[in-house]
Image 1: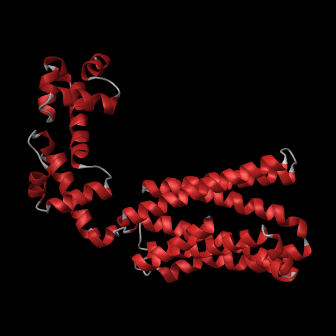
Image 2 (image 1 turned 180 degrees about the horizontal axis):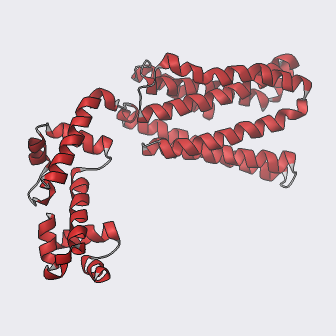
Image 3 (image 1 turned 90 degrees about the vertical axis):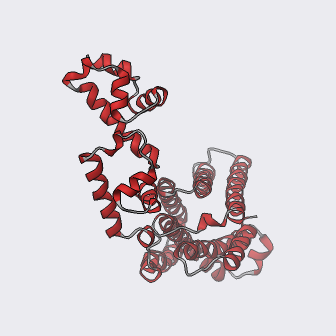
Length: 331
């Protein structure tokens, strides 16, 4: 099943996308390497093939699986990182594959002189997989990609547990070991299938933009400085009629650049950004010496809110207290 999905991914990426794009390049590299490991899986679990292939050839192929796994981890890390910042240069990124290349002769020597070291190498690679996937899940921003990474994390964790509990510690039976193996393979197959279907249905999932190309550093700094000036100095957020368009006009920038800055740099939309300032202003007013002379409605209006329900909801979400509760605590 996984071999079939790997082939499908490679064909689809080749036909549909430009493979010179870093995001697509690293994903394609990942599936090409995965194809090698999938083929080995078929060879290893097919007795007539292992009988047909000579032992030196089989051992060489086995030794290549370790570097292949390291190569898969590397290419997947580069892919996930490129989805966040695709400024990686392919030639420079090739240096990340040096450990995978150097590991091949080392593994060959270990297998030749210390055949019993195979379980240790397996555990090291699987633990590396698990640690790398945890980092990737924390880094990724696309839901389909996160679900794929979670399925791969479960797959590697179950495989690590299955091999150690059965082969090394002999705690579980062979039947239980096979059940864990089948479950892990099924989970990964579902994760791969879902990711492929999402890419086919929504190709833009793999069309990540480089922030520096669409919002240059000079423009980003300019917007940042102007926002600080208008909000810290003029306190434009106190205007209840403030909109993204009117704020962009005040900053002398386009609404699209403002939206891009808020969404991609600050990870907020316009309403979230304005609300945060207004809540901080209302808290400042509640803490002011003249707070006892003002009603909650007056604080609300002076902060830029024109709806009591919106003010109460936003205030509680930000502070954990309603305005009246916050005021009592301060008094």
